[in-house]
Image (tube, rainbow, N blue to C red; front, side, top):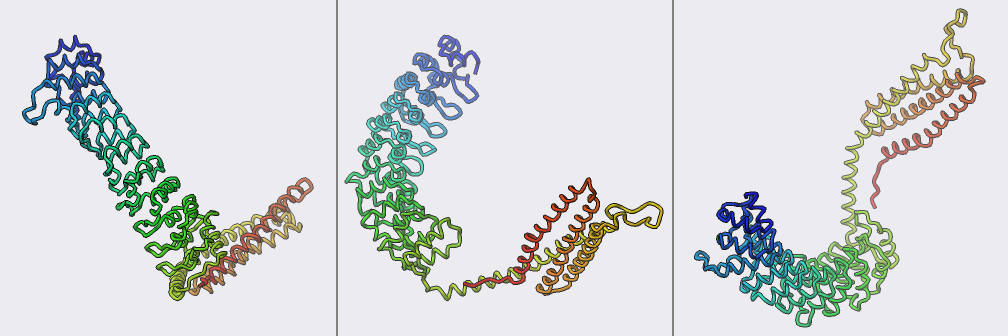
Length: 577
């Protein structure tokens, strides 16, 4: 669109617009907005609209790239004067020969690419004045849902625009009331918490109370889910209270009471029970009553509420489709509370009830595989009330345990060879390193050699010191033990029987440990022999203390841990309970 023309349309400069009136038809923006679209978007000036339309009337129903007329844009922006001017001009136009509709009806009913009418836009943006103009001009049109499944009435109820809800209901003869997911405007009003909308919709169409969405939820289900007691009181009037027994066929056959129990909405439960005191008898598609549900979803407040009711005894021992009573479910749950103690200790609770798997609550408490935070507490309470174990499956259980034990034993046998090889390889590496270090230390003696000519030439300088002698002996022991250990580990690889292999690994380990200790002693004594002079005696003592700490650590941790694990590998067994 030409810059001057676009600017004039934005600013409402009718003089400039009229100078370019011959270009109205051809001048459009990149999204095909005409000067009428631009004027409707940025100004609320009826005179400008009339001036443009009197010059080029074809712009009245002209749509942009999104299928929007100028009326859509004016309604979205709440420009009531522009909307009124468009309506008045449309009224004086003749009937459209193609559609057979009056121009005013065609304009009001035109939908954009999302199937929104101008009324959708006005309602969505809460422009009450524009809504009033639009519904007055086409009272008979129902304003069906857009591509998102939204009708204007549903949008108003969902957004708590109660004045718009009242206006549509009192003006339109048969407004559409449906919304997304099969819901109605009454569902939307309940979710938005608009009590005024709920009352008005119920007065307009009482049958909305039984309308269910695609999940089978009625407005009462929604109110119970939201714990909206005020809406529930409106919905549960005497002539409508049958809806308390209506089930959500596509959501586990839950009633509103089931939904309230599942989400811990105690106030909603009490409201439902005050109107329909027998609705607690209903079960879901799994045969579960509200106590089953409360325990399964760990709603302690709901359990506490149910325990106060006179009919608690009827729920305590009722079985679901799997034969589980609420006590069975409690035994398998991770929930534990003082209230649950009352449930376990209730005099009417059948502690010896069997489910279809022939298990009692006590059986289930000890057979659940997954970790549970309060497992020990639940088992303890069941023991306190002397809940018995069931022995109906004892032969079958023993057979299963034996089969499982054999399977685990076979798997262990398959894995043990790899474990043994890994242990042997690691030990060979360690002993080989010790042998290498100690062998080298035997030819690089501490203090060096006597290089002076004489009878002692080539001899070790510190040969007369006791610490040096201890170094030589301990280093020799480390070399012999480490090389012997390497030999034993190598010999062990020629055996097939695990017990014989591990026996030799035991011998090799002892030799390796001796060589390791001897190497540390050689280090300590060699260092002491070098530093044990008057200036360095303190440092020598410090090295000895630090070095000896290794021997303590070696004994406490390595020796004890490795011996225990090697014995566990040899004597591995599974105990059958």
